[in-house]
Image (cartoon, rainbow, N blue to C red; front, side, top):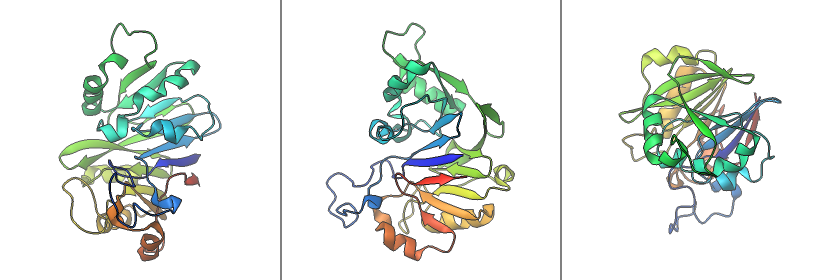
Length: 253
C-alpha cells in the first residue's frame, strides 16, 4: 500500500497570505504546505482522505485514474472544500463518499447541489455513505477502520488501514477508541505548533504523548502551521522515530 501526502498544512495553508515570517518566506519546498489530504493506493484501489480547497493543485501531478472512494474526516471547509473538483474522475463512474452522521449532514448543507434528488448535468457523480467509528468496511481490497477523535467538542474521524493510521485535527481521544489503534506501526497525527495552546488542535508535545500511547514504530506529524518553524529545524528537535510529513512525501506500508 502506498501513501502520498497531498497536503500537510492547516486551514490557512503555508505560506499564509500576507505573512512575512521566515517560514512563509522560505524557498524550501518542504516549508510549503497545502491543506491536509492523503492518497491511499494499492494496485487495484485508490482512496482519498479529505478533498480540501487545494485538491485541484494537489491531484494534477498524480496519474489520472479511477478514484474508488473518498473518506471524510469532518466537514470543515479545509477538508471538503474541493469536492466539486472531483468531477473529472466521475467519467470512470460514480464515486462513493464516506462520512459519519455529523459530517454527512454538514456536507448536505454545504454542497446541496451535489446530492440533490434531481441533479443538473455536470455535477459530480458522488453518493454519500454513512459510516461509524469502530465499524470497519472494505473498499476494493482496502479495509478501512474509522476511529473517533475529538476536534475540540466535535467528534470527527481518523482512519486505520492495516498497520497505518491517519488522524488529523484531533485535540483528544476517548480511551474506548485506543484499542482500535493496537498494532499500528506507522502513525500520522496532527501537531499544530510547539506552543500557544489551541482549543481544538494538539501541539507537538500532545502529539508525541499520543504517539507513545499508540506505540507506533514511526510517527509523522501533519496539519502543522507556519508557527511550528522551518521544516529542517523542527526535524532536528524531534525524537527518534518522529518526523514532519511534507507535501508530496510517499510511504510504502
